[in-house]
Amino acid sequence: MASSGFWSLGGQNADNPGNQSPSATRAWCQAAAQKFPGGLGSKLCAMLNVGEEEKPADTPTKQEQETLDETCGCNKPCNCSKAATGFSDLYSTDLLPALDGDAKTMTFLQEVVDILLAYIVESFDRSTKVIDFHYPNELLQRNNWELSDDPESLDDILVSCRATLKYAIKTAHPRYFNQLSTGLDMVGLAADWLTSTANTNMFTYEVAPVFVLLEYVTLKKMREIIGWPEGRGDGIFSPGGAISNMYAMLLARFKMFPEVKEKGMSSIPKLAAFTSEHSHFSIKKGAAALGIGTESVICIKVDETGKMIPSDLEKKILEAKQKGLVPFFVSATAGTTVYGAFDPLIAISDICKKYNVWFHVDGAWGGSLLMSQKHRGKLNGVERANSMTWNPHKMMAVPLQCSALLVREEGLMQNCNQMHAVYLFQQDKHYDLSYDTGDKALQCGRHVDIFKLWLMWRAKGTIGFEAQIDKCLELSEYLYNKIKDREGYEMIFNGKPQHTNVCFWYLPPGVRCIEDKVEKTERLAKVAPVIKARMMEYGTTMVSYQPQGDKVNFFRMVISNPAATLEDIDFLIEEIERLGHDL
Image 1 (cartoon, helix red, strand yellow):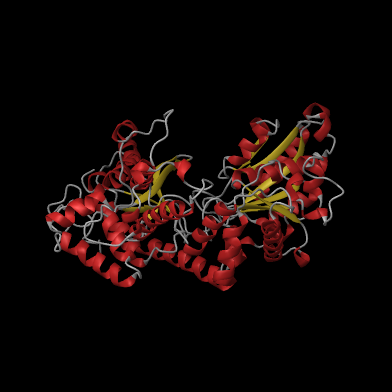
Image 2 (cartoon, helix red, strand yellow):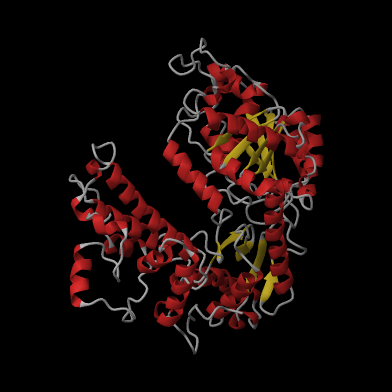
């Protein structure tokens, strides 16, 4: 059932969530105050502006209020750290490394942490909005976002922090289903804080000793899970799956034509890459960036469920060869973005081997199913791949960003990308130079993305990730079973979802009765965009939609948020019907 904390649009009993019962909110805060130690619960409530619309039970006296106005600004007498520090008179130059900046720095950062903790707690509260939506021009006018020549006080900085989070999307919210990356893991968050505090670069062991070793250990473990003997091979963490896919294409080209590194594309024949019609756009972007050209990416037909058809792949390879092109790269997809389809990797691998073509698996979305004994069979044949993209920031819910490229051939990345910069990669260092991994990357500066994955893996264990992934797939099957025969719903393709993607049309009562197919299709194309807009304007939930081929706009529900439950799936169904009943 839909939570009563959410308001209706156009309903007979519409209640604005901003006007929900103050007593209910206070009850939540009282529970929080008991749950959190050290008065943190009370602080959270104060920062959530509890009691703004109702006179608090403990109203301070006039004398107390004058004292509060001069100190911390809390809504009752307290001994919080703000009482000793007036941020309106402090600037960034008063913080470390300023002399005697220790206490001020700790007080300021504690205030920032308090803001973050309040936001985190609120993000998991189903009675709060997923989004406080404003149109761009309106949001620009609501706050002063402009940069100035003169510094602002730390009090202004804290105001900016609160405003930024106020209008941010609560991606941790249990009813946020909009993207493939959702949720917020507390251990991963702690690791991200630590990573930013360490503030180092991944290019050499000398400046990131622990992080380099953790990347080595984790990539080896991931290669073992793929099925490569003893976890041998190579890999790197990159800024997202698109870059990982481009790395794979770069390596495939270098493997076939190593001279291209020095002499460029004019020194080699015209190439051809192959991927499915439903593959990620990054394959074409990579071809454009590498000078291969988007016209050289040949799209392979898919079946009704979105899986690549191997016979068409072989046909297109032969056609390319007849035209004088050199097939060098095939990207199969393990978990397509829209349908969640898994290409038949074994059959594709056989074709790649037959024609001596690099076999890459884009598992950015579906690769994490390798962690599940129940579902890893969907990637049978991945162990035959030359390379694989795997994004733990999706199904494993590692905080953004965390994407790995795994490569079966050790040393290939180094040979392809190294430039021997002597000011970084001196050859006479006193330790094993194989741990200076920066020269095999396209980047020089490389963010530390490994620690949050490694620390979460330590906290959950492989079995913890497995349970988390299995739960998400169970929820998607629950949604599918609820709507497949429900009035007003039509599935985009027959059969259970392969991943957590559930694709469907919702047909409002006014559309169901239209007999003219053209008119019905035109009306149906407008339904999902309007419902999505209403979701955002009222903040109740977020789900993506898109057209695909000859199919007009439909909803693509994906579940990767560990906080989601059966209740949230039920809510989504009822919310779609409520928001779209009048269309």
